[in-house]
Length: 239
Ligand SMILES: NC(=O)c1ccc[n+]([C@@H]2O[C@H](COP(=O)([O-])OP(=O)(O)OC[C@H]3O[C@@H](n4cnc5c(N)ncnc54)[C@H](OP(=O)(O)O)[C@@H]3O)[C@@H](O)[C@H]2O)c1
Image (tube, rainbow, N blue to C red; front, side, top):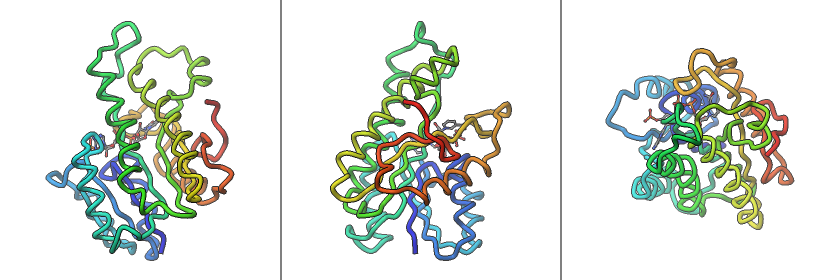
């Protein structure tokens, strides 16, 4: 009865995680969306596929919302001591892709750090009692958060996003260390460049391939993998 918690599950890669997991009736999926007051028909339609799916609200840019979410999670699972097997910190934004280092604004950087870094940090903090021996925490990062990769790509924009994902990578290393004693595995994974609203139609990967690869990678992780940075296909990314 593996339990999956997925943020940003109403569209894009988060929805694809739910879609692929939904056909296994042994899965329990807590699918979080920024707001319940919206069209969630794509997510709702997966409820009939076999898995047990709970749709919960979590705005990962709001500490209050994340705290309220943790209470809903405990309620659905039946207590603070109930284990989450996979916590997938997927929600993210790339709101100012045209900004470069020369046009970066404080608001843009603060917004990206809030959602892309503090969101996963706060989510892990409030759900810590559910993270137990063997739990896998995945922070959805990006190749743009890799310093090594970015140096080969002549980056032309997405500066706030890139900085926030590099910070998320560092958060991953800290979370891996801080949770090592509990036997929790924490990794960051780059999904590749995928056709979603964020990735755009020019992207090279279909959602099915990216998420299929990520689930295989996540299921195969060992305790010694904690703190590592992977590409969706399980290969290692340079920091
Ligand atoms: N697609 C790519 O090529 C690519 C490449 C590298 C990394 N990634 C990463 O993969 C993750 C998913 O990206 P995607 O391609 O699926 O993007 P997307 O199609 O834009 O979907 C983003 C998801 O994140 C949610 N989200 C954003 N801000 C949120 C908030 N404050 N609270 C809760 N949910 C929030 C969105 O919810 P709303 O519908 O409410 O906005 C949506 O469900 C992101 O972390 C992204 O950085 C994507």
